[in-house]
Every structure is written in C-alpha cells, then in structure tokens.
Length: 245
Image (cartoon, rainbow, N blue to C red):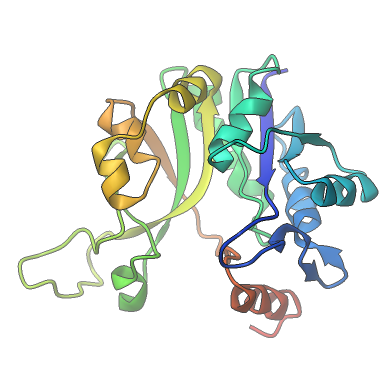
C-alpha cells in the first residue's frame, strides 16, 4: 500500500458534542465525509479512526472502513498516527471529519506533490482570502507562502500586515484549510515531538514542523468548504446542500 487516508472522528467536543453523527439530509456527517473522500483517486485505503462505539457502529452501518483507537489520543493527528503506525504505507492523509463539503480533488491535490517529489515531507491546502472579515478573524488561519509554494508561517493574526494594519485586497492573502498529507516518517516524528513555542502561542500544531525546519508544501484550491464547529455551521452546510446558499 502506498497511500492511506484517515478520518479522525471523536464524539466529545466542547462546542458541538456528537457532531460526527449530526444528521445532514438523512445521513450522519461522517458518512458525507467518508463518501466524498473515497471518490479521490490517490488512495489505496480510507478509514475512519474513532474512540467512540457510537461512531464505530454508525460507520459500520453504512459500510465504511473503521478502526477503534485509544481514548488517550490528545489530537486528531495522534489518532491518525496510531492507525498509520500499523499500516505499511508511504503517505498518510489526515482528512478532517468535520468537512462534509470537501471535494475529492482537494485530497488528490495534497497527495500528488508527495508522489512527485520525495523531498516534500508535508503538504496542505490554502485558499485565497477575499474579505476583510476573514482576514481579521482569528478563527481563520492565515498563511504566508514563498515563491516556491512552501509555507513560511501560519498565524491567527492578519498577515501579511502593514504598519497601519489596513486591509489591502490586492495583496496575496491565503487562508489555511486543515487537510494534510504527510510522509509516514514525518507524521511519526511529529507525534513523538513535544509542542514548540510558536505552536503553543498560536494554537496551531503545524508550526511544529516549521519551527524544526521541515518544509510544508501548500496547494491552492478554489473549492469552498464549511468546517462544522458549531450547530450554526451545520445549518450552513445543510443550506448549501439544499442549494439555498
């Protein structure tokens, strides 16, 4: 096997408990994510990783691949790594379980650079920022990208900034979309390495790679997704799927 995709899913959440099982037009959200992910062409296997029996049974019910993981995994990335360590593979994708609108092409686009260039350890997605509201929103993670298409920094602050902190729609501004493809060895290094200072300050785990000198390739996408963090986000997804917004 060359490429493994893992969808980490946990039931407990401070803002939206049980969201992987939230109903979206008659299907649990995790089913929407899984069915979209398996349409990607790059994967040999896609599996849901959970520590909750309810999610496990729901995935089994719709015919998906699922494994139980330790309840002690501190993050979704650790859950992905727990599955990957027992699988012979070269590349591992971390597919967020709260992205029911993801497009298969988004997953293919982060795997392809690692297939083409063995020197790339990690790849992720970005999207152009087109509104000042998103630019200033600390929940929208911004990315500075170099001329070779690698991330220079990720921040919750509005970057790139200027001395008067004004909004400049002509500047190249990107938001991060939290889908990742890793070389297996890079992922295993990550989960064995303690958090780094900038990572802790920003609350952004991907900075661990940058602080230790790893390069993160970024790929721009035009697909617009809605990550579900709250019941209000869920309603936005339902409206989008109904063609109402």
